[in-house]
Length: 241
Image 1 (cartoon, rainbow, N blue to C red):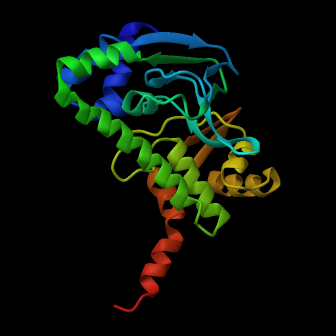
Image 2 (cartoon, rainbow, N blue to C red):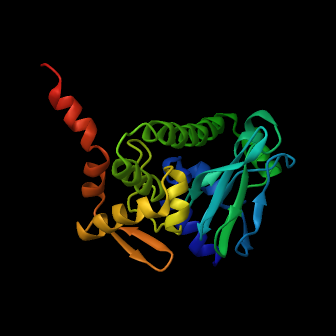
């Protein structure tokens, strides 16, 4: 991806699109673009501190290490998704493992550049806080959506989140493609592939999503959102006034 295209994308999608123009300009002047093959690690849990990263093209899986068991797949980072800001805030080693699931282009803002921007303008910490709030929003969304009882609702909520349009505060203007197999999707909502397949077929039949080779695209954000929130609506309607 050319630098000009990357700058345009980052200015319109994800964290930087919510920041002040002057701060955005300083960050975009310092980001470094890198290409990764499929299955390449961006970083692993326990690696030394580094700056935040963002997906430009492609996708990467985020895995959380758990005591005594294999790392747990928790989220798929797609175009416009920033991650890895914790070392900038607290100076810790990497907390998660991030590995590409297809050939991908990413950009990073190295720690030295982060510190230079913040030293020149301490008020810019508000934008780091914003990035942290966006990460918290994703984590809370994962937790809340996991409590949905219906597998179809959990799946609808998952697709919206992976496409970047689930959040009530930081939703993308348009959904991004989801580069994930049905088996991997099932892992994120604790469903087998045999249970996931009929749900996705029903969504296709209703015109909510389109499925291609290794790709899912949301065709009707409002309709899929209504499907994800259907039990909430029913519970609300059943409460006394």
